[in-house]
Image (cartoon, rainbow, N blue to C red):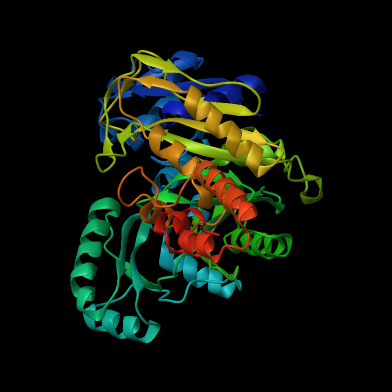
Length: 495
């Protein structure tokens, strides 16, 4: 087993890895930038080293400094967390060349799955369903127009090296194509230093379902069930849950088998996630593979009883998986909400400043992952994620109620947060019923935090009133017609 692990990240994920190291008796070494010199991850690690100025390019994305430091302090492994270098083939290759273990997949696997078009080709070879579209970048405008006409609008233009919702545009018609292509290529070049773009058929109102997989260096593979990740804004997840209430057991077997086939296709080991789009008929299509630990991994841990970070370390050390597929069962339901420093009433503008108050909730079934506390600084240099709040329950309903209670208890002052939006989602009737897709936030909260659909409480109250009226005058067609004709009641009686 490793003696010392350098954590090439910051915030809550760095703290998460530090805690796993402490429980395993492994020394942890943190890195921190100027902006993070008083951070919790720097405080709690066994060792902490200044890595550079606040901009990520001068600190957490300075490949040479990180690897040199790891060699200098005799770290025998590097854990990348997520983001930054976690899916960077060049970084992983250099870590391997330096004789240091990368806690994650091989650079070869990352290379095979890093290009979205190459990954689509690979999935096609291994009989994993893919969204109709191109399996190589489009060469020019004429070719793109011809392909789009053949597939049929609407289509998506997507950056081949993309991820995280960047480099992606929906195109409704032929007239929009040229300008959309130019804009997508420009964004792709800026974000990923690669302007290659491909075309996918736009799947109407899909759900975003992902499967957690794990492989070891001995050829063993397991899946740890699926996660529901359809509650998004601007293609960024804000609420995730496990398992998905939409995925029935028959479909679960099919989608998890496809996910393991995808992992085998690239000789994958360590933690990874296969993402799918699923339509209303439960037909699913490969979207991409995230070759790292996911932000939302806590919900999988809560329903499986596993520690995915410890398992990452175990597998990276060359050990076999500590569990088999038949050992795994789903226990209850878990829901996670991402709490961001941003203003949902002002186009989700990031909010920065000092946390003058930070009181995290607790109680039965509640887990909070955060790298901040009272007095911490929310910087403009990094992702505005403050905390991940997860709730477990015996049922989905109990998990949501616990999440609602915990959101109400969470006290954060000094910056604006998205807690008001998260509360509104949890109170939404369609969310509670599980009837939503990736367009949920845009459709339900198009005009701000006032949902178009009444809350569950409003619907229950309205139903009780209507029921009483109909019992009192059950023969009156006039009352029934009045209720039906009234837009307010019609909205309340959505079902």
